[in-house]
Amino acid sequence: MKKKYQRLALVLLLLASPAVLSGCLAAAAVGGGAVAGAGTIAYLRGELKSTEGHQFSVVWAATVKAVEQLEFIVVNKVNDAVSGKYECVTAEDKTVHINVQRVGDNITEIRIRVGTFGDETLSRYILNKIQSNI
Image (cartoon, rainbow, N blue to C red; front, side):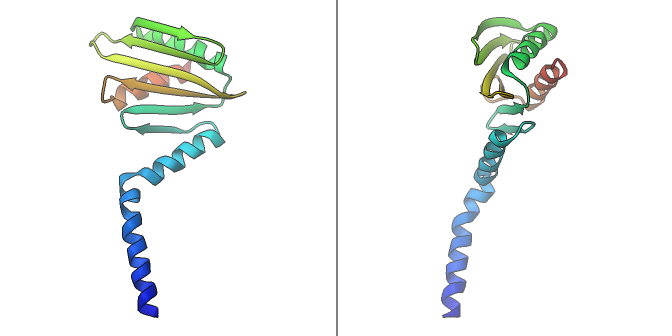
């Protein structure tokens, strides 16, 4: 009987290891934490995601100011009372997508993607610029 439980435990461990090693569980934990509270930052699959503890209007104004300070060429800019999107191009001809979304009264999500596959360093620089304007 003891061997049966040991084999079952081994099988369960082996089945769970691909999810743990691929980061799926970590991504789920980060995603769940983002809704629970502000201040979470995650870089996943080429996109930087940050949850800020501020109203949408404050974060959007900071985003507008950051894009101006960075002197990006604005290709498209769309916003309303709950979301906003920027599509920009850098001087190095990299496409930048910035999405700002209201999640709650004082919770706003920022998503930044540079190029097709992402650029974590530039994404974090853009986020820092937005945060410095809040």
